[in-house]
Length: 78
Image (cartoon, rainbow, N blue to C red; front, side, top):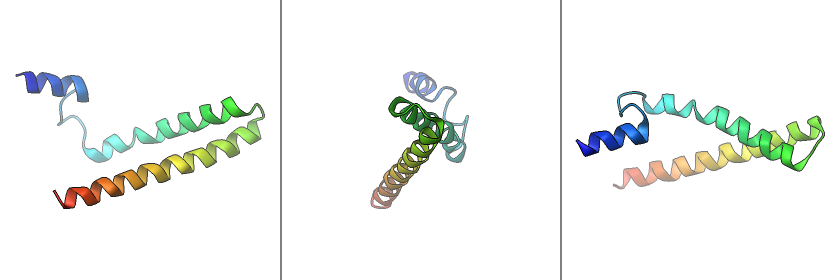
C-alpha cells in the first residue's frame, strides 16, 4: 500500500499513466523555457537572446542525449 501511494506522489497518477515516450514530450517545453530565461538574463536585445537560447538549447539537448546514452549502456550490463 505504501509503495502504491509513493508511486502516486512521485509520478502523479501511477506508472500506467504515461509511457516513456510521452514523458519525453515534457522535455521540449522545459528546454525552450530554460534556454529563453538563460538568454534573457544575460542580454536585453531579442536577436541576441534568440541566438543565445539556440546555443543553450542545443547544449541541453546534447547533454540530455549523452546522459540517456550512458544510462542506456549501463542498463545493458544490469
